[in-house]
Image (tube, rainbow, N blue to C red; front, side, top):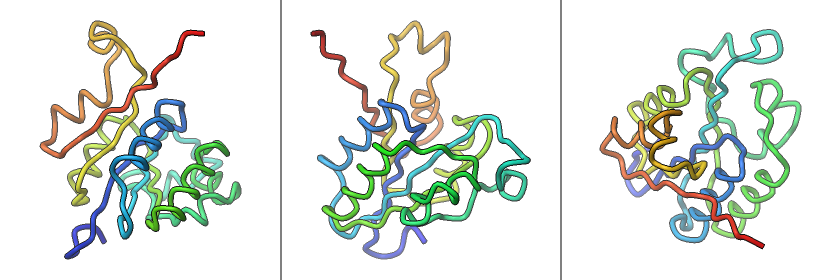
Length: 167
């Protein structure tokens, strides 16, 4: 898996929000290059044990799921994930244009803890994560996944924020 000679693994945390899409766009435009592996990390806070594979994989997260399989709504539902069409289109386009391999790992629990677990277990080159654009005070009060991950690990982590245009 990750860390083999010459392979570069880029982690991208997603909750399928606009902030996550901004992070994906930034990574596609500025970071990803041919031959890279993109590990899409999706954490579901509250698993639905009756509708998904969560009970089988809760402690370790799902096995790596190729994007082609994860794009199938039946497979995504099997893991309790609800990816949006825009993100899947962006991922498929990026994979084709940049000649990269995209795999998905679904985890269940606290996003901060689960992302840190993946960083510890997987030799990623870096992590890209979206931001909700909260100010410093709101991040302190509400908690920030990206701040927490940055504090816990020495892995290069780029936080992308959605730029809101007034119009």
